[in-house]
Image 1 (cartoon, rainbow, N blue to C red):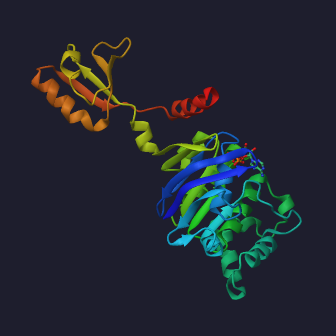
Image 2: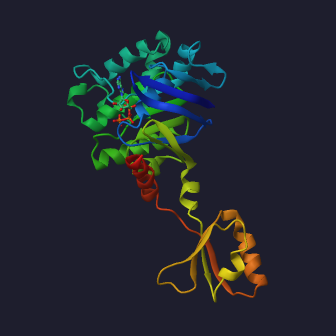
Length: 302
Ligand SMILES: Nc1ncnc2c1ncn2[C@@H]1O[C@H](COP(=O)(O)OP(=O)(O)OP(=O)(O)O)[C@@H](O)[C@H]1O
């Protein structure tokens, strides 16, 4: 379990991350989403122990950032935003060099390198010099270096940045595959990236965490859609759970209920008792693009 409590980071007068708290369970795949400058990289650098928080704590199980940073780093694989790869080295030489930096014991290095090459699907390019690789393959080399010490947590900063559509698809497949064996945190400013690989999203806005939700819940939290014969309003307005009941434009008998999903049985019971024929009652799915735009719109007006 990753536990982040009241994490804050200031750069001089600028508060890049303000009082952020969240927990991530073992095996989760979480997207850290936000526009440029929202504070994603700063959070990732703190989680990986490369940047000291101004305030707050980070824990992984019983390890605490600070006293246990080295131990924590052994459990984390990190793909930084612009992963430094040495262009003149071959993939295999670069990984051997990184394995030494990652403190992989000498007698285990060959196996670790072979494993990272396999998992990052780099076999065909293992002996190629990095400068001859496409950007997509270079990103894979970055992922491979993050896997060398067999971490159970992977932190990937903008892994699809600058890739073409085919490379993006391949990188998403790779992340999904990695997620079968590790907890994965992926940062991005593109909602589709989160939708493609994550179950849960943390949305950052101007250094603050403004949404922490499962994608499925976020999509379903748009209230309920009701189809009935007649006018349900006189019967439903007395229910405390319903904040608003609005007819859907151009659709007679359709109403939108601003209400939690779990009040559906109560709605059905009330309408049945009132003798109102009910045709359908379903969750209204929210458009995540709209949710993200709304969240960021508030920034613009803040
Ligand atoms: N070393 C630094 N010194 C001063 N300000 C910094 C530093 N690093 C980041 N910042 C500022 O902190 C804020 C958050 O930056 P950060 O890189 O964490 O955001 P981000 O969400 O990762 O953005 P991007 O997607 O562009 O990388 C920005 O305003 C940025 O300019």
